[in-house]
Amino acid sequence: MFSMRKPTEKIIAHLDPDLRDLIPGYLKNREKDIKIITKSIKIADFDKIRMLAHSMRGSGGGYGFMPISKIGEALERAARIKDLKQIKKHLDELSDFLERVTLVYD
Image 1 (cartoon, rainbow, N blue to C red):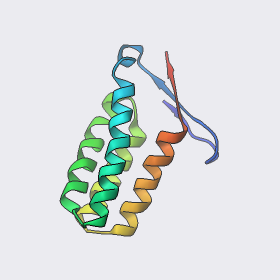
Image 2: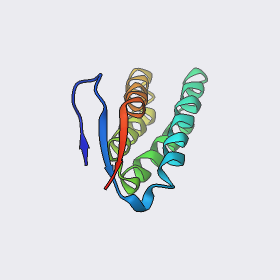
Image 3: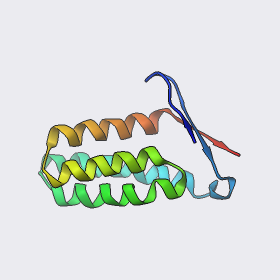
């Protein structure tokens, strides 16, 4: 469950304690995805963007991050139609989410 407030406030993610050891690596991999997608934008590698977005879409909810799944879905859709403006918008959303998320294990 997430609590989303004003853009400058933290996003509280209530997560399963059994995932405590896995979540930092998962989030670090999403930060790597941002770098890869940014490079892929520069060379118009929409297939790479779509593949990474599809992976986010499928994995986010399993780790308790439905916003990542929703962003992944939107990124995948934008990559499929080669909409750079939307790709950049959703990449910014992912970056913002990762910067503001606070993890609570309960």
